[in-house]
Every structure is written in C-alpha cells, then in structure tokens.
Amino acid sequence: MTPSNPVPPIVPETPTPSTARSEVWGSDAIARMLHRLEVPYVALVPGASFRGLHDSLVNDLGNKTPQMLTCIHEESAVAIAHGYAKASGRMMGAILHSNVGLLHASMAIFNAWCDRVPMLILGATGPWDAARRRPWIDWIHTMSDQGGLIRSFTKWDNQPASVPAAYDALLRAAQMATTAPRGPVYVNLDAGLQESKLTELPPLPDVSRFRAPESVQPSPDLVRRAADLLSNATAPVILAGRGNHTLESWRARVALAEKLNARVITDLKAGAVFPTRHPLHVGPPGSFLAEAATKVLREADVVLSLDWIDLAGTLKQAFGEQITVPHLLEACRARRSSPPAAAPADAPTRAHDVMNLRAVADAFNEATDGIDVCLTRLPLGWRGGYRHFAHPLDYLGADGGAGVGSGPGMTVGAALALRGSGRVPVALCGDGDYLMGVTALWTATHYGIPCLFIVCNNRSFYNDEAHQERVAITRSRPVENKWIGQRIGDPDMDLAMMAVAQGAKGIGPVTHPDQLAKAIKDGLRAVMDGEVCVIDARVLPGYDADVSGEKRAVERSTGRA
Ligand SMILES: Cc1ncc(C[n+]2csc(CCOP(=O)(O)OP(=O)(O)O)c2C)c(N)n1
Ligand SMILES: [Mg+2]
Figure 1 (cartoon, rainbow, N blue to C red):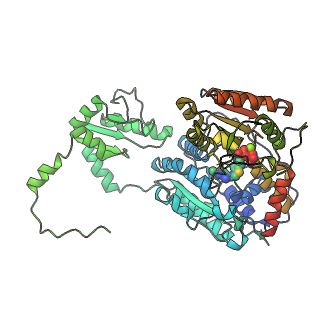
Figure 2 (figure 1 turned 45 degrees about the horizontal axis):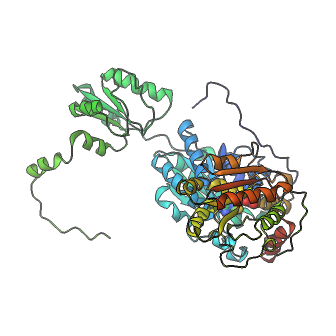
Figure 3 (figure 1 turned 90 degrees about the vertical axis):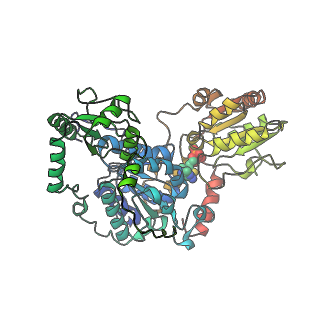
C-alpha cells in the first residue's frame, strides 16, 4: 500500500560506521542478500547462534534495510512481523535464536500460517560442524532437524550449507512467502557458515528475476460461466472472505455487489473487506453467521465465495447438517464395494560503590543471614563464588534448555512446591528473563504463592552484547555498536510497577548499592508475610571480569575466539 502521508521514521539506532571494510564474512553476504531483497525490518530477541549475522546487520549494513526491532519475547517478534504484513501487505523478517527461540515463537508462527501472511523467518543452528562447537551450549542449541519443529505450519524451510546456497535459499524463501497462498518460510543459518571468513563476496543474484509470480487468473470460460450464473440469479449472495486490503480491491467488490444487486456477508476473521454500512451488507459480521446473514444465505440461489474462511462450516451453519446425504443416498446407483486400503566462590567484599552483580550478591548474603532461602534462579553473570550452598534446596539449578524466559514461571512453580517448607523462594534473575515471563507473577498473586524476584536489571540482553563484542573484535569492527539490538532501555521499564500491576509488591528502582540490603530485607519480610515481591535492582551492564574470562577460556579451547 502506498501511504498518503509521509511516514514518520522510527528511532533509527544508528551504529558508528565500521572502517574495517577489507574482510568479508559469511554473515555479511547473507545480510547483503537481505538488503537486496529489501527486507525492511527484522524483529528479534538476540542469541549467540546468529551473532555473526547480528554483527553484519549492524556493522556491515549499518542497521538499515533491514533495521532491527529488539523484542522481549520471540512470540512478540513473530507477531510484530505478522501484524506488519497484515497492515502493509509486505513481508518483513524475524530472526529466532536456535531451537529455543524457535520454540518460543512457534505459536506465533502457527498464527501467521493460518492467516496466510508472508514472513521471512531466519533461524540459526550449530556450528553444524560438531568439531567447532563450544562445549554444552552449542550442543544443546543444535538439532538434527530444527526446521522439523515448525514444518507442519510453514510453507518451506531450508538449511543452506554455503553462501551461494544461502543466497538461493533466501531468494526461494522470499518468493515462496510472497506467492499466493502466502505464508511464513524458515531459513536456518549455520553459525559456522555465518562466522566463516570469505576470500571474496560471491556475486549477489539479480533478485528481480525471482519475484513472486502474478496471481493465477481464472480461465475466461470460468469467469463467463460464473458471470452467467450471477447475472441470472434472483437472490445472489457474496461471501466476502480473505481479501486484499487495498482500496482498489475494496471498490471493485462494492462495484460488483452493486452491479449484481447482491447481498454481501463478511466475517470478523478476515478483517474489513466491504463497507458494513452499505445497504447491501447483511450484518453484523461475526466469527459465526448472524441471524440475518443466515436467513439471506438460506434464500440465496447463487453464492459467490471470495476465499471465504471455512465455506463448508458456514454452509453447514446455514443449512444444517448433512442435508445432502439423504438425497444422494436415494439418487446414487450402488457401486461394487472394495475395502479401503489401510491408512498408512569468592570471599565477599563489603564496600561497594558500583551497582553490579557482586554488590547484589553481597547485599543478598547480608540480608539472608539466618534466613533459609531457596534460589530458584541465578542470573547469567553470576559467579559460583558469590554464595555458598549448604543444603540441596539452597539452589535449584538452571533452566535445562538455556531458553530465556522461564525464570518467573519456574520460580512460581518452585514456590508452590516450597509452601510450608520454611524456605523463602528467591529468584535472582536477568531483566530479559523476567520480562519474557513476567505474567507468571499474576498466577502467584492470584493463588497466594509467595516468592521474591530480585531482578538484576542491566537493561539489556547483556549476554549477547558480550557475543557481539567478541565478533566485532574478531572482525576488527566497532565494539561500541555492541548494544544495538540488545539494550532494553530508553525508556527504561519500571519492573516494580509491572509487579504492582499484577497485585504484587514492587520495590525500586534501587540504584545505589547502599540501598540494596534494606530493599532485599524488606522484600524477604514481605514474602515471609505471604506476598509476592519484585525488586528492580538497576545494575550496570557488564559481567564480573572472571566470568567473561571463563567464557573466553572455553571459546579459546574450542577454537571459537
Ligand atoms: C528463548 C531464548 N531466546 C534467546 C536466547 C539467547 N540469549 C541467551 S542469554 C540472553 C540474554 C538474557 O538477558 P537477561 O536475562 O537480561 O540476562 P543478561 O544477559 O542481561 O545477564 C539471550 C537473549 C535464549 N537463550 N533463549
Ligand atoms: Mg539483562
């Protein structure tokens, strides 16, 4: 659709230009292909499986065509692409982290499939070459058939093994997504391929030669026969279903209805396709037929169905069940029957002037002196030396699959099990984890399941900033761009208010280390008094040096600096 007014730009998030232009990486080629395809935006939650592509979008393309839209949950990322396609008729992209991001997004992909919207979903896996995988995390985030997770509700999927194959996969994917009946497609990009250095950029194809074909046209003979039926009808009815949302199509539908003097029925599933105030419209539109529409349909002698959603179900609603079967039973000649084929630990330091995880840990240790707590979650930057464990219920461990967003729900479940145990359930979690699963709090307040959340709110998916930093260093690109597509600030979210909104107690934002111990003591007291409580602890982005040191050591040992 062509906008009639100039479109105000969204916040650009402009990166510092990269001067390292001499080297080309696999993901640069993929990013340039997306640019060629004119993908306007990519909605994403960051993840290391596509850190190569992430870097290329920021530092090679300059975060333009496509521009990143940072999301809090993969389900929202895909829903944003869905809504964009519905409103504009255009395809945008979503990038989903390995299997976990894909699993989060799967329901939204299913919606997009049912709604037949064009969508380019990029995924990531690997490195496919197992010898290049980092211990544990790359293994847990690699599956032998990741596309299989969503194959039954995507139009096409592919996992290219080279840059030319990736060009081809993206071309085909874009073409398939935008060819009617349109739908989501999935291209799974090997992390090893993204992060491989190229000697030169393979030439990009001419994308204009791979556009979606023109819509299939009905044969003139069929048009003539339908026109005869409609022109000679005494009570024609148009069931206006899934339709193009352009004014031109809208006007053509109105003109046809007026020319035929046909009654028009619409529904609420397909959106606005016909003026509901028009005298020929029989309403109101609904998910099922309204009484007036049922009557008109029953009296129709010719029905024109324009991609009506569930035509059979609608006719069944109007005419009742199986009216045809008794007639057929009487009229049919018996055939010879044949049976159908069978269906186939560090010592704490006390004085802090910086709000970091260490300060939170020390304040937490101070505040919990003499209180039994059960840690249901620890944040990603936590170091084992920050706190000792002396009982099996002191800490329940991580989430199993490294899928961010499970912290709130798992905490509420653990707290349910811990009621009456004398232990205070406490989640020390990241803001990304908290935000993705935040509505689990309502279940806790609704059912009276006390628990404490201390959100280590660095206003970032910081773990992945660290990844972008490493990629930028490897590629001699500007490290200062690592925040793009990662930060959850500007505006900073008021996490305590999100708790209050759900009937929980909210404390904070706590911005100075001196305020931490009191805030945590207040929170513990509230939970011991039966409340659900959230403390918004505004920590600085950045992990304790020892943590990234450990990570770097692991990466060095596996050849992935
Ligand atoms: C479902 C899912 N999406 C994306 C990721 C990739 N990922 C790993 S850690 C992380 C950041 C989590 O942010 P937060 O909880 O705030 O912790 P921080 O990194 O800031 O310490 C992301 C996005 C993932 N593991 N799981
Ligand atoms: Mg964070």
